Amino acid sequence: MILQVIGVLFFTLGTFFVVVASVGMVRFPDPLMRLHASTKAGTLGAAFVASGVMCFYPTLSIAARGTALILFLLLTAPVAAHMIGRASYYGGEEFNVHLWDGTVIDEMHDALWPTDESASGSSPAG
Image (tube, rainbow, N blue to C red):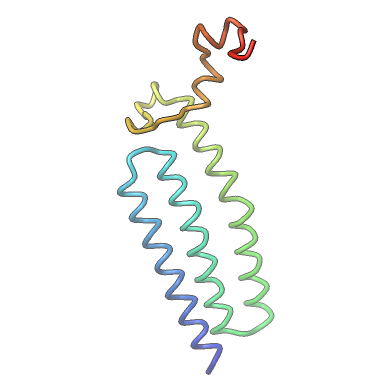
């Protein structure tokens, strides 16, 4: 009985985080922000749902599968988001993908395409 209550709590939390991820995917203006929403909240939501399933069906087989699923998500989602983010950043002009107009700092742009000041090699201190 207590495991079922804990399972329902996990399902509720998982559903909340999956809904937050989907709202972030729709509302955020740029691909990098959307990736952040989908990987962070989506992975956490899926982990909570898998934990809920493990509470409802407390067998070794389900626990092993749920644990493997959670570990797989935690290991692969950040790498996949990083690769998709890099591809969208580098291919932005070609695929008509742009950063949000409100983006204040773009350190990657400065590293890839230095301005005349940063290319001259003069440091502000010296």
